[in-house]
Length: 209
Ligand SMILES: C[S@@+](CC[C@H](N)C(=O)[O-])C[C@H]1O[C@@H](n2cnc3c(N)ncnc32)[C@H](O)[C@@H]1O
Image (tube, rainbow, N blue to C red; front, side, top):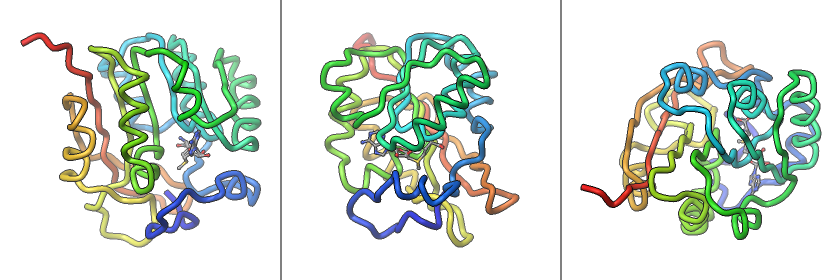
């Protein structure tokens, strides 16, 4: 997903600068094929939801048009400007929030569904505990979380930050139970066959046996 994201970096990049340079390598202008599949399969039904790090908003516009009441949070002003424009062009109703999703989550309450493409696989490297805390705050028993993350099974050069099945199970499995963890391919403007990723759908346990 990114030539520009240093896989060894221990801190966040200057996201806005990556957008300012032009089109970042994760941006295809279209909703992620795997997100479309998950929705078409009926695994997540229209509900009140949060997207973390929506980027230029193709997924948010898609979800809004499929009936989701979506709040999409993004900290890079240029990306959010593009996302607003995209939603306007698609006549999609998205509540956009410009800011840090960690701050947003402090008073946001909970949602039925949380989604990210490329947020967990980046942020886990420098802020995993905060991310788990955030996920706890914005979910309630029964809430679903879908993350699309780069995979260590990818053998080619470049692409998104990579995470192994074992790491995903160890990190997200601390809070949530797995509905599915399946491979898919991220579309990429820089590589026709895209990059291997994990589609990881989880649910917060209800406490019932
Ligand atoms: C790899 S990009 C993916 C963008 C988008 N989901 C997509 O697939 O095109 C990660 C996004 O998360 C945003 N981001 C990173 N940290 C953030 C934070 N703390 N709060 C809100 N957005 C954040 C970045 O600005 C960037 O747009």
